[in-house]
Picture 1 (spheres, rainbow, N blue to C red):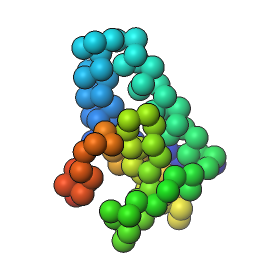
Picture 2 (tube, rainbow, N blue to C red; picture 1 turned 60 degrees about the vertical axis):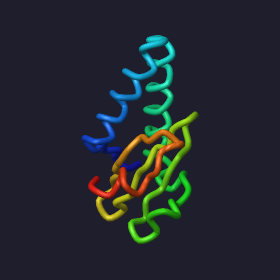
Picture 3 (cartoon, helix red, strand yellow; picture 1 turned 180 degrees about the vertical axis):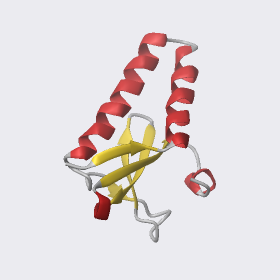
Picture 4 (cartoon, rainbow, N blue to C red; picture 1 turned 90 degrees about the vertical axis):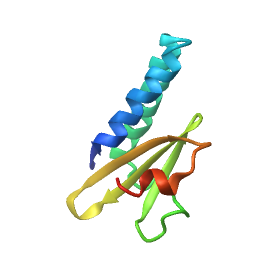
Amino acid sequence: MVQVVWAEPALADLKEIYQFIARDSPRYAQITVEKITRTAARLRTFPRLGEVLAEFPARQYRQLVVGAYRLIYREDAEHGRIFIMGVIHASRNLPPLLENR
């Protein structure tokens, strides 16, 4: 099993997702965030579960789609870790959002 580490920007993404959805439904906001975190937890056992991102072929980012969101991560196999880099709405353009993460 590998360790799943959430980068600060990814945690901020989760908070923003919760706050946005909670304006209409706190219950659905909680369900959505829990679904995203459960999906990320699956990476402990299956670190290469997601598909490689075409937008960043040199960085070896992968993604898992969770509802309307893209869970972006990269594997550090040498140290047995997965880094969650962001949780981005599928309608948003990835390159500018991930450049500084």
